[in-house]
Image 1 (tube, rainbow, N blue to C red):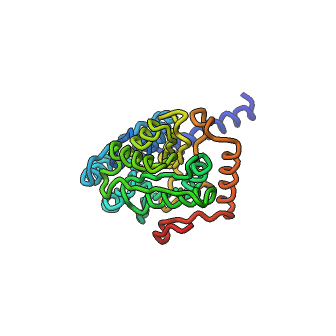
Image 2: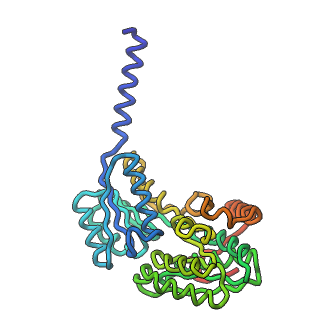
Image 3: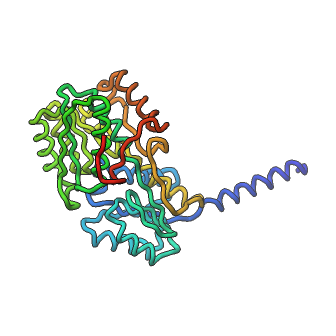
Length: 333
């Protein structure tokens, strides 16, 4: 073998060794929010991201669906004791439990979605839901024939008011005289998993003239979308792309890319680039957006798409300021 060929071969071996070294052995896990793994929305988005990682890498992950707050802390601690890392805590309601468990296991990595936990081994990921909600509100106002639109939230908390506030601002930007009905499903975690109640609230808004209804209600939203479709009105999905649930009857979905958050957490831990601290994901970062596909393209006119594209660019550039309800818990237009 010539010297040059030998050097090239040795270099290839070295690169292979470095690549293998870079792939850290990890034992990922997920503790979902209440409402179920297959809620077609928030939890299922996280599951999709974890599944993508498993498919691409062959690394399996463990997961758990809690029914109450006590089970959340138990699941986090059990995964930690088993050496799972990173562990993804899905939802704001896990913050208290994660604060305890992450402090007990400082050598493990934890990621929480939708809340901030300030510990050196915790990665906190939050989203600018108001920006994506502005875009679907704009589209909803342009699609509405009655000038009356609805919003159904899940648990009545500031985070869900944040969705509603951005939605209203987007509606008003396109249609200042629009009338908007808003209902929250409840004040406990059960509000995320009550599609019957969601359907009832949607029907009441339809009876008042709403012909476009946006939900931010987890599994409860399945009932909202079904009621809108059954009544010949338009629904707007949330978190995951829900357009396919009722093709041609869901105007669009506000995408909250929790799938990317989950995938990136696992992938970064594997390649050694995982870092604690806060990440805030909006339109600019690809963390939120609106969905356009074969299931809803007939509902989106060229004028609507152009308006949404312009608004998105203006928000990213800072020319449109979408009010963040979390900053002062007021919804100002």
